[in-house]
Amino acid sequence: MDLGEYLLRRLAQLGVGSIHGVPGDYNLTVLDYLELAGLHWVVNANELCAGYAADGYGRIKGISALITSFGVGELSAINAIGAAYSEKAPVVHIVGTPPRATQESGACLHHSLGDGNFRVFADMYKSVTCAQANLVGAATAPHLIDSTLKECIQQSRPVYIEIPTDMVRAKVPVPQFPIDFSIPAYDEAFEDKIVDSLVARIQSCRRPSILVDGFTARFGVRDDINALVKLTGFPTLTTPFGKSVIDENVSNFHGVYLESAGGAIYQSWVQGCDLVLRFGVLGSEINTFGFTAQPQSGATVTFDKYSVSLGTTGLIPVNARLVSINTVLSKLLRCLNGLSIPTSEPYPEDPFLPCEILKSFPEALDTASIDQYSLWLRMSRFLQPGDIVITETGTASYGGQSFDLPEGTTLINSSIWLSIGYMLGVCQGAALAQREMV
Image: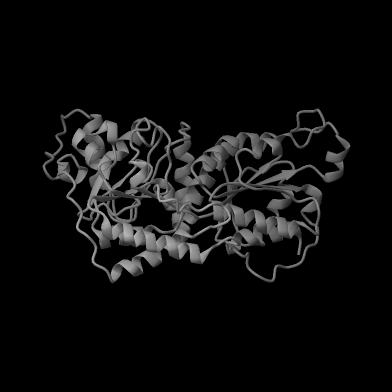
């Protein structure tokens, strides 16, 4: 099998149906294998748009791919890859590069800086990708591809794969097995201790709450977290980045955690919690309203994809002792199903929840002015279950916090990178991914 086919078939096996990009020198031979691998080629106006589209596609499907040329193409896309890195969108960036011998000779080639340094762009990408591979040898290329794709999925972040033009047709073995996604450092005994500690904390709490952030959407545990919210009945809030992860129709959902931007009564209630189950944290000043929306650390249990930190109890995993949030939640739900869960102290009544405001909202008049306060609330009435809603950085992103979202809605916003114009490309990629999944 040719190396170009191997790479693209591995992507297809992981669920990629379409690849975004811009054709150009150094990547044209790779593109010849798209049809053979059963992939749809999406040509964008430029590489930045292609990168944004790949980001949106990856957020919906769990993996995406982007093909650009060396130098001009990859640098055009690097802003989008930075966005994907900071907000954990799994994008495989494939870069077609000049032939190996030409690179080694230091020739003055187009799309380069003219100084003979062909590693300069790859060095830039080390800071915005979680793994990199340069496919310069047929013997090592399959393993490099598999390990790099594994990192993309497991870390939910972009990776960078260079394929020189003279390597595209290099012969490699046909893959015999799927990529192994097991976690070598997974410690189930340690995980069981964490679950036992969680059960004990839950049974002894008086004022618990659940705070769901946006990285939770990358963990594949949306159903389990919603089951936990319903089973416990604990007051539940989200961050702006985490909005839409939780079904907003449940009675114990209380909107976005505003802290300094909200009422004092709600601030003091959250700060007085003796247990906060906090999922998928993004601690940017945008997402935490100037770093104020941070619950008390001693009461907070923080869930990440491969770790659970139990406040100040000391049971905090390190890299050598990894757990899986998927199995932690499934075990926790099984344990809690057979136990009596304490009733939480009630969350203060909030007449300003979007769903409550809409109940008494007057009908819009043709002569009425459009204003920031009412526009986004009224837009909620147009949304349908299962919709993907995308808000641009700025006015729309803040307004989207006021949406009353139907069940199964996915809201995509940016809560740290904030690149203006990002959402148009994301919209194309997300819509394509949704269409492929129907």
